Each structure stands twice: as structure tokens, then as C-alpha cells.
Image (tube, rainbow, N blue to C red; front, side, top):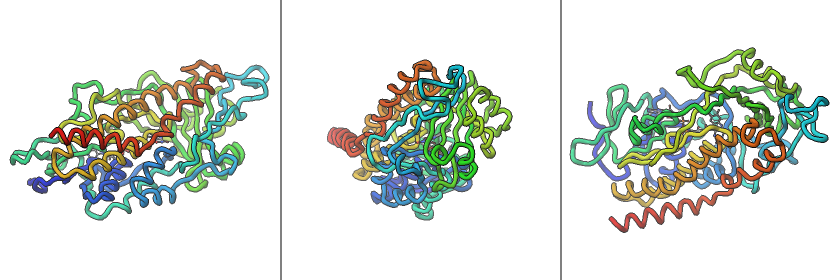
Length: 436
Ligand SMILES: Cc1cc2nc3c(=O)[nH]c(=O)nc-3n(C[C@H](O)[C@H](O)[C@H](O)COP(=O)(O)OP(=O)(O)OC[C@H]3O[C@@H](n4cnc5c(N)ncnc54)[C@H](O)[C@@H]3O)c2cc1C
């Protein structure tokens, strides 16, 4: 058992090769820095499910690398109808219990009818991707040899050779020595436990009280169920303690469905479990025909228990920094978790571009923490509220109040000036560097 190499500046280890690890690695490579990715799995891969990227995420993607932008464009599907080109989601009430005896939820609007549209605030790129396909494309951008597989991080210790390096210890008994580590190992991150300490309540993910059925429906079938307009463009269906969303992926060949429901606690040690159609249909009994027909048609649905992180007091400790879900895992209700990961990758890789020494790396971590922590933690809190809003738990079932609230809540996410984020981080980095 020997360490993989001596200390040299910017010999960075990335733990985890999901959206965060890959986009961060590509950002570094674009800036002339070659990291090593240690991924627990035997190969890159993900279960099939859709992920939506908003305008902020797409701007970050384009700034990281034109190659990532091309990979995204290859996989992305936006709303199909030209008239829906600027629509984030159409909003409908899916739950029949909200209707009066004639089926109306408000004058002229029945269960399942269009209530209002939430529009994007700019024409910037956005869209949904099949996560596994997008990751496949990202992997193609990373040169051979950068990623090492079957390397599940167990612990990190200080090097004993006087270099001040970190030594990564893997479950297979091997070790690797690097100047610094960026933990991109997701919501159950081992790096998070190491940075925060196992006893910190924020080190352990918390159940959000919501779970989601995720499944796919071939587009032909989806059109038969809800018609072309609803199947081919993004839809929200709101209800009591549950909601459902659909959007097209795979160039419109497939409708992605996420159907949310509520539970007081989650006892199963597994967070993704397979389920039966009957169980799912029981959860949506009392909902209108559109929602019940979508739920009935979902192929091989899985249940995802939705966990999130309590706010971390820091995203770094000495030479270890957390990025993406490892730093700020969120519920998915604003569709912004992966976007925040990509923004993180952009900001940290941009500041590390100028780093020449180990102290520079540490200062880059400080700057990253100061700029990124407030924004990403705000997303975790507001995402939880958004889930409650859609399920009549924040503004009750007052549809006017829900609309007013929803119209305002995404702008700060979509309209972020990413150059400004990089500039702020660079100023902190340079200021702190000057003090060294
Ligand atoms: C139901 C649901 C729907 C979502 N929908 C959206 C959406 O529409 N839009 C959006 O922006 N976001 C969405 N998200 C959030 C988004 O999926 C995540 O924010 C994002 O995928 C996190 O990426 P990551 O790379 O940080 O972590 P992960 O994807 O979890 O990747 C972590 C990687 O680290 C590896 N790893 C873990 N532990 C170790 C270890 N000890 N050693 C080595 N490797 C390790 C794992 O194998 C994995 O490859 C959704 C999330 C859920 C649960």
C-alpha cells in the first residue's frame, strides 16, 4: 500500500463523478488543471430519470466549456410547442377535492384545466435531459485516466511526510496522496462528515416529509392520455399534500413524470425503492382523471424518499472543500439542485485557475465558501417551501395567493449574474491572498 504521488500544487482529488464531479473536472481541465476523480461505482452511470436545467444552469454550463454546452444541447428537450417556448411550467389543479360540486376550482377553470403559466424571465437556454444520457456525454469530454473507478472513499488523513498533503483512504484498502480534495460525493457524502464532524446534525441528511414516484411514459402513450399540448410541454398538477409534474425528455420521445406525496417519516434504509402501481394509485385516489391516468401509465416506477441537508456552517476545512449535493443537498421542488452544482463547478474552477500554491488553494476554498454558501443554502430553504406551496401547505388552497407567490419565487435563481459571482469570489481570493 503506497501513496500515489508526491505533493505538488494543484494535484487535486475529486471524490465522486456525478454531475458535480464531472462538470468541476471539466472546468479545471479547461483551465489547464488535470485533477483525479475517484468514483465509488465500477463505472460512471445513473438510473434513468429526467433532470431539468434552468437558464442559470445553462449559462453556467456554457461558461464552463463549449463542450459541456454541446453535450447539453445534444441531450436537451425543451417544450415542444412554439407557443410554450418561454414557459417554465403550465399550472393546473390535479386534485378533485379542491373543486366545487360542478368540478370548478375557480370561475371558468375546472380540475385539469390551465390555471396559469409561469414564464422564464429571459430567453436563455434551458431544458430537460435524461440524466444517464447527459452523464454519458460529459464522460466523453474527460480524458482517459482522469477517473479511477471502484474507489469508495472511507477516510482522509494528513500525510506523514511533512508535505501537509491529504491522504485519501479507500474501502479497497488503497490510498492516494493529493494536495487537496473537493468532495462531490453527493447527499450521503463521506467528505461532508469529515468536514463538519459526524456529530454535527448538519452532517446527516434529513427526511423532508415528501417522497416522489419517478417514471417515464412513451410520448405516444402520454399524448393519448392527456393530449399533445399537455404531454409535450411542462405541466404541474397541484393538490392536497401531493403534486405531480411532467416534462418531455429525449427529444420529445418520452414524458418524464414525478409524482410527489407526503409521509411523516421514512424508515427504510434505502431511499430509492421499487413500488407497485396499486400503491401509487392509492396515493392519488381522489385526484382527477388526468393525474390518475398518468399515474396508471408510469413504467417501472420507483419511489425516491426526498432528503436534504440542514445548513452547513462551512463548506471547507483546511484542504478539503465540499461542492454540489455534498455541500447543499436540496429537495427538488425548484428544479434547481443540479443547476446549483454546475454553478459551484464554474465558480470554484474559475478561481482555481489562478492558484499557484497550496495557500492559494486554501484561499480559493474560503472565497468559494463565502460566495456560494448563502445562495445554495437559500435554495435548500426555498425549495422546501415551494414543495409546501404546490401541496396547499404554505398558502393553503388559496389559488390567487399560490399564483402570486409562485410568480416571484424563481427569479433570483434564474437571473443570477454568474460573472458577478466569479468576480466576488476572485476579490475575496485576491484580498485574502494579499494578506498571506
Ligand atoms: C427526485 C429528484 C429530482 C430532481 N430533479 C432535479 C431537476 O429537475 N433539476 C435539478 O437541477 N436538480 C434536480 N435534482 C437534484 C439533482 O439531481 C442533484 O442536485 C444532482 O444530481 C447532484 O449531483 P452531485 O454530482 O452533487 O451528486 P450525485 O449525483 O449524488 O453524485 C455523487 C457521486 O459520488 C459518488 N460517491 C458517493 N460516495 C462516494 C465515496 N464515498 N467515494 C467515492 N465516490 C462516491 C457516487 O457514486 C456518485 O457518482 C433532483 C433530485 C431528486 C432526488
